[in-house]
Image 1 (spheres, helix red, strand yellow):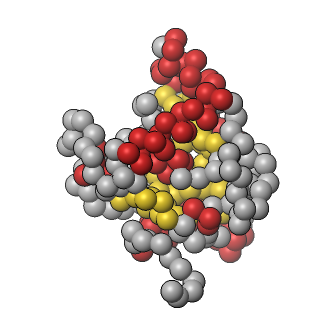
Image 2 (image 1 turned 90 degrees about the vertical axis):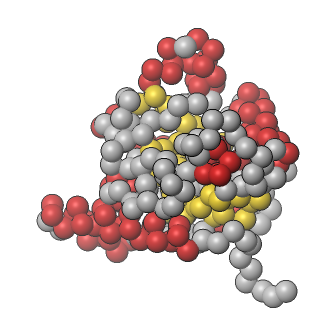
Image 3 (image 1 turned 90 degrees about the horizontal axis):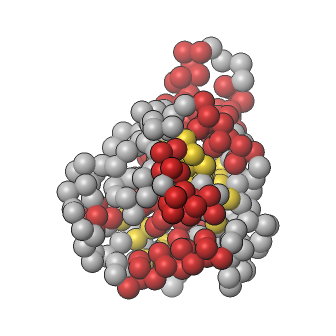
Length: 249
């Protein structure tokens, strides 16, 4: 599935928020938007388990309700469904508007409540769609780097995610995917059976910077956008491919 990229780093996939649930007792069957979505979610999980031997670490850190920005590194086209497949929340993609013109693809996207955006994905309509989902209590996946890495290394963050953070009240959960560049990076024509993993970090809040942004100058506001983006990217870089435990053993 094609995904809208944008020069400000707002490559994104929208998640529709599920009803409030206990983080310690997630539902056995997630409350997805419809049967078609559930079948797709299940198919991705099966693919990741059988073909890629996936691992999911600390998904309990992502709230099952309320506005959340999932900020992930980006190495492959399989990253978006990987980030979402480990969670008990339904995902909607921000998809290029042109994809909706194809009868079958368009039907599936509409059933999944996908939001059409322009080719760059960074226009006012795309940003409004993102903020509308967050203000409604949903969650969204953003890629601070803006596009897929070309060498497998983490890239500098762009300021676009900082703008979204300031305009919303959502918490930010840093996310890191592992192995997806080797499995299906830009240099790979067909997905390889390499082990992949996704890890969710500790939630981040930017209340102080949001408060400052209300009254600061335009030049300082741009600095805040980039500061937030840099802090999120640093949190992503610190994540390691193993389970974090508060107790030992």
